Image (tube, rainbow, N blue to C red):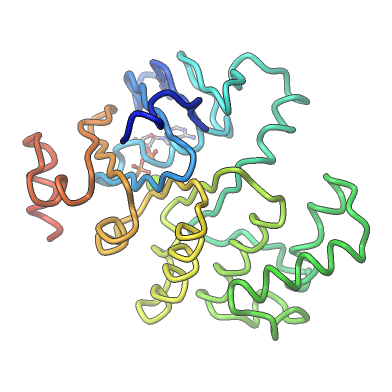
Length: 251
Ligand code: ADP
Ligand code: MG
């Protein structure tokens, strides 16, 4: 990270975040910043709390303690209505696509811009078509999700998130549910987004993507972010024993 980034207001700032479910302390004390244009890959063993952390960033999960800021505004201090406004600026893509099954691809993309932003149908259609082109699915506007491959559905889900013109995109294992031959087409769309300067936090097991696209790798285990580093450093010289063990198992 250079000095300019350090002085800028982070897009997302997390201070002493804690999240417990009953007696299960999932996130113990996390403080990290995400800066404009950064691509963060969050990696770590299953059950480490990666999904919970991502869901705490937009308050889909309510932190037990600590603060989350979005562009300087404290999300953890907002009422639901104001929270919704800021949440719209954080696109989220899940493992299982979560498209509306009874709506066409075009309708999936138009819904939120029209309902939430009050966009006209004409503008929403234009935007949807532009985004479908961007993810390589211009010819699928009238298709229904069930008639698309997993890779195509996930690209629609990305386009749908982009339709709200988010400032940051949160991805939770976006390729984990895909057949291997479809992983590449989704990673390509994500790589293009990164190249265009989108700020992204990506939970992934795709180490190639982390190596090639991320600016920073955050390694999470046992409720903490154990280390943050450039992908080059992280993969060549993991600092903690926990990360060394993890990499030894997967590489
Ligand atoms: P990861 O994404 O790294 O695999 P998760 O964030 O999904 O990890 O889960 C971390 C821990 O939190 C697990 O022990 C899981 O059982 C628990 N957990 C996650 N969500 C909930 C929930 N809604 N209610 C209770 N426990 C949960
Ligand atoms: Mg998870």
